[in-house]
Image (cartoon, rainbow, N blue to C red; front, side):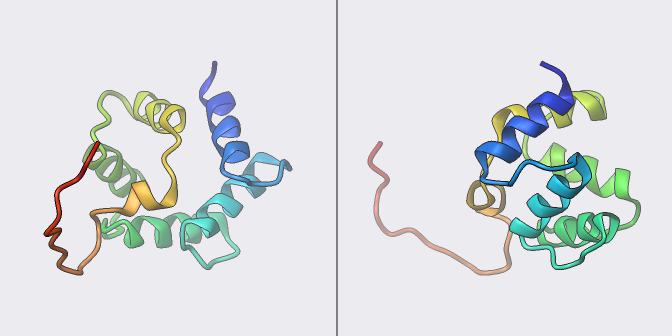
Length: 108
């Protein structure tokens, strides 16, 4: 599947209502914590929430994708991200300023 197909699938699985792709992308960014009604501003807000200061869109986005373990060219990393389709909780799990200590062992 193409990058756009993978992105569309992720949006739909995430509960985003199907409409024009830019509107779906904005709705997804807002579901991840962005508050702007402008897609470019929402990406900036999302990346800052994820812990990546906004210098340029491409630099901040690529740093965010690299931090999640994705590699390769930008399109490859985006494709990997949309295929994995992480939820808001998994995408931001360890990227916050609050210290956290788990005193219990994970059972898997």
